[in-house]
Length: 532
Image (spheres, rainbow, N blue to C red):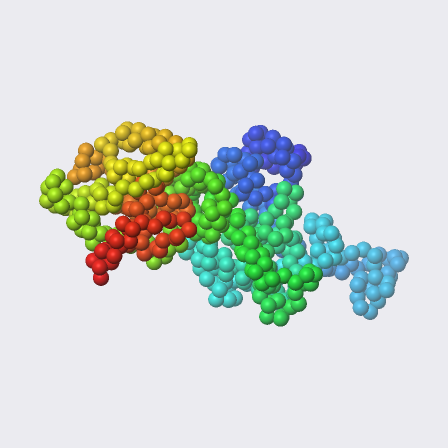
């Protein structure tokens, strides 16, 4: 690293450790504007120093841009030879159309300044950077879509997914206005990304264009490239431009698959951001929704445990991380998000009528006067509605496992008197499941001396204990977690969860991975009659 860069970092208030990190990673001054968020986090571990670096670099880039704009507007003042006895005694204007053959050999002063401050590889580069300057704010304000983008940023202080899509579309449409078949070079994409960050400081450049470790713009990645690529495909299908002949003809399925991959690349930067960030929450929610398909695809392909998935995304381990699992469920089943709350009064009565028919439970039902007490009584006795079933058949290496109704109940809603007992019970259940080759699935849990005095409610998912307001909320979150995490119900309580799935959320049974239970089918008929 040059001494100039080290001095600059010191002037920016950064310490020697940061300077040493830049030296070790061979970051030079010409690569500063290409540093993305992931690289910056590697170079500068402390958040405060990273913010200071971004502010200083953004300020310097803005000054350079303004300087470039000012220089590009300077007219190419002709050089006039006024010396007596010189070769041009008649004071002819250099470059005039009347006597261009005798033009003075020196270049116009403005052109020299431009070449000195912004060296280019050739005439094409000079044309790209100075003949095609983009006034992004003016471009956006000239259309209704652009005004939506500006209005979104003004109202929210940042761009949302819709605004980013509109912004990318407006920029690409402008770039292709004279030539639908125009190719956008990595340098041009990098220039456009800089313009976006300049106008919208909260945007990450890595979202719009991808830059490799050498500071070179990577073709095929970033929101701008993907928008250009997809626009070209539309133009090609309409016959507006000629497609590139790549030899053998491909099937429509393979083309659609390739398009899907490109669309995934558009949100890959958001996915990587979620793996290292948990704030701000507004951004987390937006990026989480954008990356739903990517994460769902990973869950289907990977064999990672629930624990690994929860550890992969810091936002999931926040106290409100369960909201992200709820969002994933809502994206998969948008019509079912509030089903349990809506149907619970009928379902609660349906359960209590079948389990509280005699003895202590009949007396308990008479004592349950409030809706909350009736809810707790129903949830903590739900397993009594179903018969006991074999969870594991006996094999040469594994004994038969036929869980009791108590074990089935604890796999559905676990009731303990205090939190210390809760952790002990979970450890014992985890050890037991390991003997049968199973991992600890999500489970709802309630803490209190008895069913009438429930003090705390939890939805336990992997390493995280999500504390929520009511036992019913804990059950709701736990059910949605099974589907958001693409994991199976615990075998002991599979009858209960499958009944809730089909009767309440109206999600059909998948014959490939969900067993058939005659008890569930019978109960579904009875409950359907009650609902109607």
